[in-house]
Amino acid sequence: MKNFKSVFVLTAVLFALVSLTGMASAQEFSVGMTVQDLSNQIWAATATELEELVEADGGEFTAVDCKSNAAQQVSQIENFIASGVDVMIVHPAEKNAVEEPLKRAMEQGIKVYSWDEKLENSDMNWVIDNYELGKMIGRHAAEWINEKLGGETQVGVLTYPQIQILKQRGDGIVDAINEHAPDAEIVAKSSAINPIEGIAKTETFLQQYPDMKVIAAIGGGGAVGANEAVKAAGKLTDDFGIFAADATDQELEAMVNNEANRMSVLITGDAEKMASVIYGYIQKLLNDEEVPQNVYRELIPVTQENVDQYYNGQE
Image (cartoon, rainbow, N blue to C red):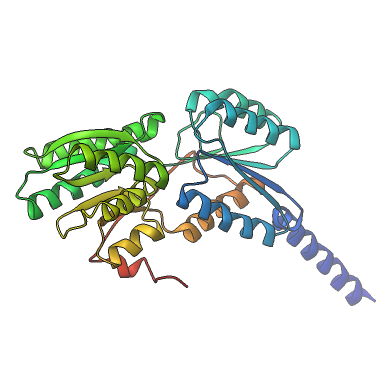
C-alpha cells in the first residue's frame, strides 16, 4: 500500500509539472496578425505557415492586411482587442499610429509581437537594420554596375517612403550606389511594394529611360514585377540587373532562369523558417517566458552563385 501511495504521489507531481510546462500549447489560444499588404508574397506565405503551426497546436489564427493604411490597421488592432486574442503580431504601417492601441492591448493582457518595427508598446520587436539592408542591396547593385557596365548606367529605384522603415531602406540603397558606383546616375524613383506596382512603375521607368540597365528595389514584391516588365519590354539582356530584398520564390526562380533578378537579400530565411522563428517566440510569450525586447534578423545575400542553397524549385 505504501509503495502504491508513493507511485500515486509521484505520478500526480509529474502530471502537474507537465501540465504547467505545456499550458500554452495544451490550452486553446488565439493569434491575430495584421500586416501591411498580403499581396506581398513573403508576408502572405509566412502567414500561411504560421496558421498551420498555430492550428496544429489547437489554436486559432487570423491574418489581415491594412493595404499600408494606418487608420485601417488601428481598426484591425481594435478588433483583435475586442475579440480577446492572446497574442497580436503587428507589422506596422505607421509606428506612431499603433502605439496607443497596442498599449491598451497590453493592459488587457494581450502579448504584442512587433514585426520589423521598434515599438515601445510591445513585448518583443523582431527587427531589421533597414538602412544597412538598403546599403547591402545598393552595394550589390554597384558591384554589378562596375563589373558589367563599366561603372556607368541609368538606375531606377523602387522604394516606399510612405513607411518610415522602408524609406530608410531606400535611403540606404541610394547612398550605397552613390558611394560605390559614383558615375552611375539614379534617374528615377517610385513607390512599389507588390508585383502589380512593380510592373507599372518599371514600365514607366523603361519608357522614360530606355537605356536603364539597373533597378534596385526595397522588396521582393516590386522586384518580381520589375522582372516581368523588363521581359515584356524586350529589355532582358545579360547586363540588366535587378537587386532587392526578401528573396521570394519568384525572385530565386528568376535567378535560376538567368532573368533580370540578380540578387536579393534573404531576411532570416524562407517563409517556413520565418514562421518557425516567430512561432517559437509566440510560444515563449504565451508561457510568460522572458524574451529579448529587440531581436535583429539575419541578412543573407542570395545570388546566382549560391541560389541553389536556398531554392529547390517548385515542389
